[in-house]
Image (cartoon, rainbow, N blue to C red):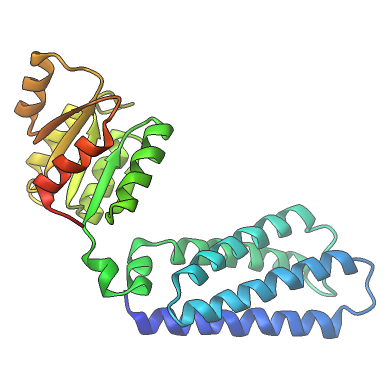
Length: 245
């Protein structure tokens, strides 16, 4: 992802948001929905300032820009009947809703994140967590981020395969019991695909019998981590496999 492209897009967004605030103040001075208009202008000013920060390659500004556009999206969907411009209201509202979606999708891309965060972030080793338990994902993601790793997540085997093929993580932590494709089958598919065959896979599972461990090794797993996960032990196994972040 080109840093210059991010700078240009962010600067154009800042100009657009700023111009829209100016136009609102000039055109809609004597309307009955002043409160709604003031809220919209505040959201647009926040979006403009965060877009300027994003143009300066500040990651906090990128996150704020996404949040501002989420707020703008919900604002327009909730108050569209009140915000009726003088001409063609459906286009005005629809354009803002569409733009908010595009901005969120664009600036939430991993490539954009890495470009904004700079070379140091791109050198961080990445780990893909595949587990359908939100609590486990949250706990392990926090521990891995604190240890300096970049973290990707997936809640199903199908999504895990997709993310692994698209992002090429340095390591995959894979639950055995997943909705849809089970963990061992996911591992076999990863090992059979040339683009993911070299990625080490560690299984996370509550099953701990010798037969289970043997089946995981046969599927291509590098290690077997028993749930509930001991974070210190997990980090030690990760460092053995791919080194520190």
